[in-house]
Length: 325
Ligand code: 8YV
Image (cartoon, rainbow, N blue to C red; front, top):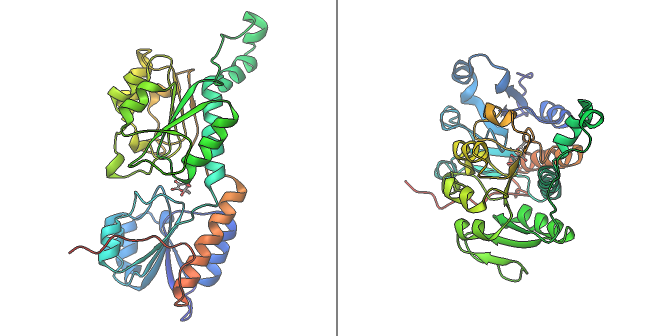
């Protein structure tokens, strides 16, 4: 806990952020570093009553029991865009302000999607291991890979990231198709009303939808079967959207061609079977993990908190649902 000061609101930091944000938060607020506490419940019992703000990331969010332990809470600033790890209905019911960091991370997350797609199709990580292990010199060429140009990519969730990815896929001469809750006007990509019919039509399926209950295990065994033994699955949004057991089973049986995954259902745990597979490329939830994105995300966290405690309009607020009782 940093030194309490009457003019510095008390802020609970749930997960660490890039150093410059941490320094600024520690300068402007009386900070409580929850991730460093061995007994978090006891810490919150001791300090929860005075805490007026929370800073957290998209993946960790704010667990209901933590929100409930903060009776004076006013504002939650999310270092990310994901809203799946915070109960927005409860936030609305309590009249909280919530902010995220949209736009600044869009291109970097889309780049990671593109990188994972290229890496999965062209077996970049496998090739790297092949060279390092001396297999090139020993066995000659590595096995042939797959062309992306001319193939069909299906994007699940054509939001900001999905659209940035679509533009990149066009540069690879891929055809772009998508599914979303509804058709989006004015876009040159073919719409499918459901994920299964999209999966039947495409060579690669890229998950860029929001997480949460509405999309839980949306990519199930049926979708993977429709994608088929040459198909690739890329996920840069939330691991919960994919039925991980079904994914492992499909890969083990050769019923899916490969995968490029930045996110997992129970991070940082990764299903051990995936670690053994040469047709799978793994990343540690790092899509927004460039210095530039994290810096700009941090600036937005600081700006939103500052605006809230100055009684001003938030720069990037989340529109909460109508409060329900
Ligand atoms: C970040 C994210 O990795 O935006 C999100 O919801 O999951 C990611 O951008 C995370 O919020 C920072 O740890």
